[in-house]
Image (cartoon, rainbow, N blue to C red; front, top):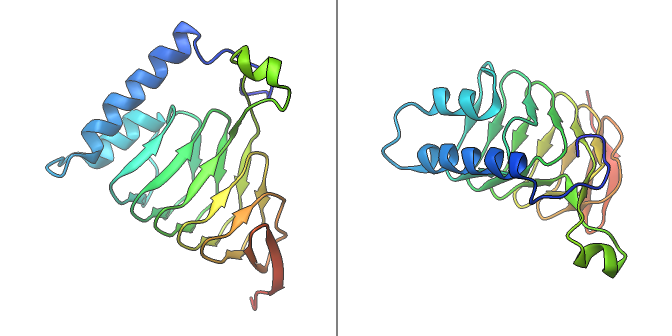
Length: 176
């Protein structure tokens, strides 16, 4: 699964890991939850320095998400981490951002057979994704990039670029 090969999402081990993540997300997303940092550490398997994720937050497993220092995700963030999601330092996600690593085969027979696969998403340091941005499987966004609200990122975005649209395209260089 983590190598981008077909896998069976009904595998008992994967099902157990998803169920564990769902329990932790349910606990995290409760308005009265007081131990959010501890829950995120249990979900992701490590303590991220300066992490802030507004509620509600959703993921598949949690353990395939790696964030750098000073990560901020606004309300309603969805990180479908069937494959790895690697996020650099000082990254900001606007409300409603979705990072989707999982995909389904184009061949209808393989889809009916329940096959899935994933592609890694990489986001460099100092990136800002505006509200309601969707990043598709296998995309890399270079450092210092800014992605405009509502964009659907289907291809890599180079470093130091402002990009927007559906599909998302570079518009201009970022002044650094």
